[in-house]
Image 1 (cartoon, rainbow, N blue to C red):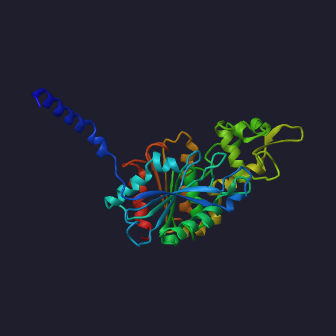
Image 2: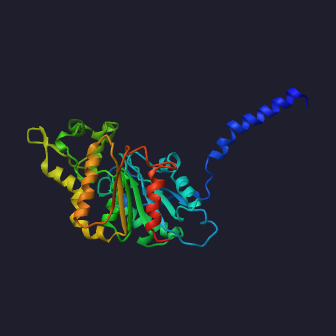
Length: 357
């Protein structure tokens, strides 16, 4: 090989090392594994929105699962509306965050479960509704039972945690409030609907005329708050005798066909949707929890969420519920994932401290 050819070869090797090797080694190689499973729900058959009863589940199994005979704690993740398990697993790379913390001895091993809470509307609001589905029953009576029967878990509430983001955060808190015998450890990431905030329902930008004139759900898809509150009404004001949405509304027509605020429906929706309205009912359950924490981002564009979480933490203190309530600088979407995100730095240490391994 002449000098020119050798120089070209050396240049190529240097080029390869500079530009390709960092990418090759920069990607974290998981030691655990993610598997896909499916559960067919009987509970979710009862609905009016066309739910699929086949629910996909993505499950992270820790590094030693394949070679050991040990049983493991389980952490259930509730994804947000308009989200799905693939976003949690693939886009946010949550299993890699968990796996890396385990591999670097910052966390003990546990099984991580993300079920499919999507729907033909905006997704689960994590309630039992004759219209939009009995989601709480699905989680507590079917999903948890299935995981305990088919995987090597520690099947008690001290080794079972539920976490969630945004609407999934609301779901995590509700499950802890209503089912402490199932989930004894709760972490909610920027939960919504913890309280009313500061805006009355009448001032919200919702097109009630469009809702009342619609002949199908497709008419309101992509309408923002109008679509969201239609789904909220389906979850918390179900009426199986009222197609096409099978629910009542916060604004109803009077005898002359004029749309007016409906105070009884508003109070019924608020009492069921807003978690602070349930604190007296579930106070004993909350005080029995082994650990409960939630955080919220100071710069959420919907400041009602920030105000509600501050007040929710204050109300928990007033009824004697020990908890962690943390406000951080950021918005609800930018500081949870990644090696330096709140899952790695806050949620996993919290789980590691309180789960029974």
